[in-house]
Amino acid sequence: MATYTVGILVGSASEPSLNRRFADALVRLGADVGLEFTDIPIVDLPFFGTQYEADFPPVGQRFKTALDAVDALLFVTPEYNRSIPAVMKNAVDWASRPVGENAFPDKPVAVTGASTGDISTAVAQQELKGILLAQGAVVLGAPEVYIHVVDGFFADNGSVADADTREFLSGFLSRFHQHIRRSRT
Image (cartoon, rainbow, N blue to C red):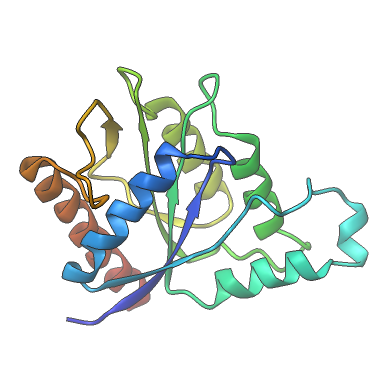
């Protein structure tokens, strides 16, 4: 089985972050299915404006270089007010610029997220998938992974405590691996 490098973007500026913990748990599961994750930080990006088109700053260049260096992207997003967080949208804006240098066309991506709310991050994920599709990304449609976190979701070591949930998430990551393979051939 081929191993693919996946950039992971966590759409939370919160400390501590539930979605950062969830992303870390996914990283633990990824090695078993041929995925190596690398964190691509987004919280240090300034809010994008057209003033950066002519003079792309080093922080933006490092971000774009990190996106280009991976085989695929995994977005782990919270849901704020029935939408994606501003830091996540800002990262998409940086990745799609400058004009003619969009990082998304033909890049395989998957979207997930976790929340303590009953519908988890379903609305935010659908919105983010639409934005990524519009930018040319090859978005994994199914399975959809809306994680409702309750007390005891995470084990003491940071992994997912429930065996059935771990199996479901491993299946999601396996499907993502297949999606990357198909997208790259």
